[in-house]
Length: 291
View 1 (cartoon, rainbow, N blue to C red):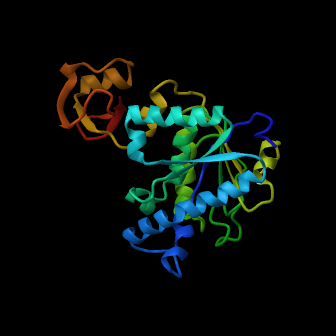
View 2 (cartoon, rainbow, N blue to C red):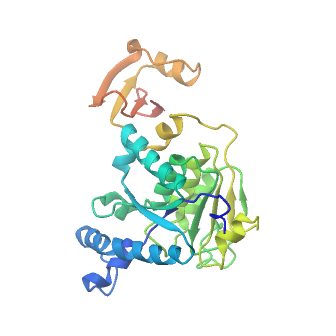
View 3 (cartoon, rainbow, N blue to C red):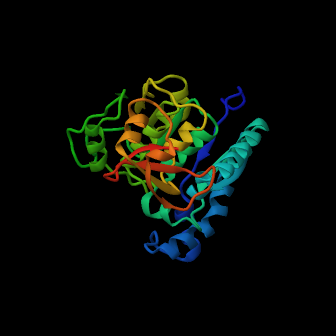
């Protein structure tokens, strides 16, 4: 209904490893990285076929887009991915985005599909990120284990106390937990995008959310909105190199909003080229800026 009304959606999907489990004759999810990657390879076609059949019943077309952090970490590849998604949306094709599990070890280990959704939201300049899980939103503790855990319906700022709550909460779906969902909400907030964490098992959950029902937890974006390249610089977590600076340069960057001059650099670590992401560290090794 919403697509036919002109709304555009990008779906970030998990499930390739689970879908490929039976093809490998496994009774449970694989534990080793090679088996997880093999299961992902076997399950990708099954997962996409499920999306193809479901969307075709509603007269919609889908396309598979496999990404890695390596793709998004290179500015040119990031722009290529953004162009691909934009063209698909312009042609009324719903992109199904997934981490390329067959080559990406980190996603399997850390459950980064939540983080991938934040990057996807930035890629298409989304107006809303919806993260579906197996509980009703963000709670003060895991509601499956703590009876008096309460739902937090609105979050205006992600504080250290919220992060502590996320550390103690988990989810049975996918490979991530509430911690990565909180991190995803923080990342898209930098671009001025709100996030909703809600229960994907609720009937018509997306339709109800988009119609304005107060479900799950709504994370509001901050007052300051980063524009242009800045969200990409802030979100990407793997600098290509490190520039160590002195106290004067630190003061110029942090307190005066000035640019970094060569005279303030004490040493450089790593190898990088123009267009690569670098982090600026102070004399104690603390990251204080990126560029």
